[in-house]
Amino acid sequence: MVYAAAALIFGLFAVVLRDDGFVTASNLLNIGRQAAPIAVMAVGMAFALGAAEIDLSVGSVAALSSLVVADAVGSFGFAAGVAITLAVGAGIGAVNGFIAVKVRIPSFLVTLGTLGIVSGVARNLNNLQSLPIRNDVYLNVFGAGSLGPISSLLIWTVVIGAVGHLALHQLRWGRHVLAVGADRSAAAALGIRTDRIRITALIASAAAASLAGMLLAGRLAIGRHDLGENLLLTVIAAVVIGGTNLFGGRASVAGAIAGSIVMAMLNNGLILMGLRVADQLIARGVIIILAVALSMREQKEA
Amino acid sequence: MTVEAQATALEVEGLCKSFRAVQALDHVDLTLRYGEVTALLGDNGAGKSTFVKCVAGVYAPDTGRMRVDGVETSIANPDAARELGIETVHQTLAVIDTLDVAENLFLNREHTRGGPIGAWLGVLDKKRMRIETAHILERLGIRIPSLRRPMGALSGGQRQAVAIGRATAWGRQIVMLDEPAAALGVEQAARVLELILNLREGGAAVLLITHNMDRVSEVCDRAVVLRQGRKTAEVAVGDVTTDDLVAYITGAKTQRTRP
Image 1 (cartoon, rainbow over the protein chains, first blue to last red):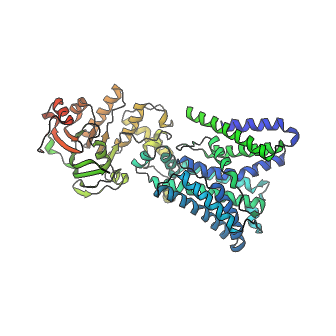
Image 2: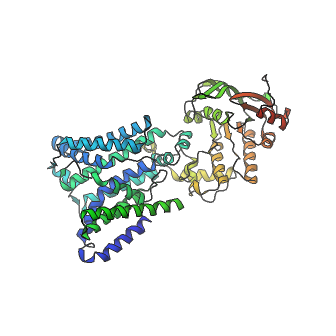
Image 3: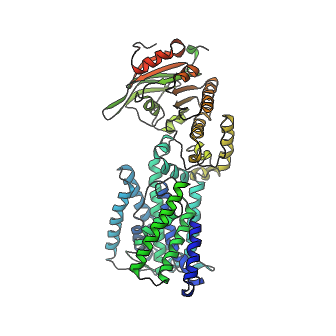
């Protein structure tokens, strides 16, 4: 379904926006670059949703990570800076998971709380000022660089997609995530450590969001308190359109990436149509509800 | 085959379990012997499933002792039960509808490949698991159209057959079946009984929870009756009539002394 939708939207924009440069190499590359952070977050979110959890803090984690990486790469160099940032992201995911599991608060509420906390911390971190990134290695690997003709952002999308797909289908962990998401008590009766699975799924989601934040920072060569902050709805829509069940038990990494490209095309097309920001918001909201409704109906029938 | 000749597989002594104010199990004793099928009978809410879940490691009992092959053990979780050779078909089947047949059969006992690193990462050996699944189902006489179909696409009877297959396929010696034939058609129910008899032939100790008295007289050697969490009777099935069993279950009749 998501692949048909992607083709349909592409075809529609190609016709409607043929004079506005939708189907030009540079614009398509632009769409790919915009899709990259969404796709990376979507892959992580697919595991959280697959485990019947949800992570509402991904946008704020991405934003905080953009600031942390800008600071840490400047202070400690490329490798250490990236490692610190990923650790911060994974740590937030671990806290989310631990509270959800041990205190028995639905992850919906836990991550709504951390969304606020992390956003606040990001705003305090540099007093709403953006932090420039001057590390060339970092900017190459996470931003404007390329391997031959292929943008590093696209490479990240492919790598994370492949890792996620393999983890979901070829690793015991991936199967257990879906088992826990489909029927937690059945999974527990078979001896699956459901707590561990739920916590690690939320760690995967937050770590992916952290990586997405680093990509956003790399693209703009800055860290800022609001980078990626508003991507939450886009990411969830991308994942659900891609065939992941919003209530657990079924997930698709390839679908999440295709869904991210759909969402990036929508963003791009609406801008090229010349819609004002307010109208873009309205149009995007309507399209997301329609698309998610359609894909959820299809999942019910499947 | 005399009942007395069989070696003890599982001994449960004084098992208690309460949920808040409700005492679900009140000092229940139960012994399973190899080569014997024991029926666990009782009305709804009598504590049968709770008992099974305690032995299967799903619930932690409040007090009570368990011995497996004469060795005192505690069963802290389902893995521990499986390691002791105790397999369970739960009333809910505990199958995952979104995973396929092979994935369900091997859930949490997956084969991995690629040596120690593969084992650590949990890299699945899907091919091996599919082949073994086909063998297991064939041996048990379970027909499933495709092993790659998600469990949710199968009929109630097929789902149940897979759940039973999962518990009985490993040559384990203690098997507990909670209402295994509830959702089955006549032919499949007969096959389940055949499976149970095969297990007994193979020397396994079987605990069978059922509401079907015909089934008790067909395959069970002994029957233990629970009522409101207490054991009210333990009888050799050959010594009593179906009416007696029903009377024990409803409380019309009780047996004070244990054999």
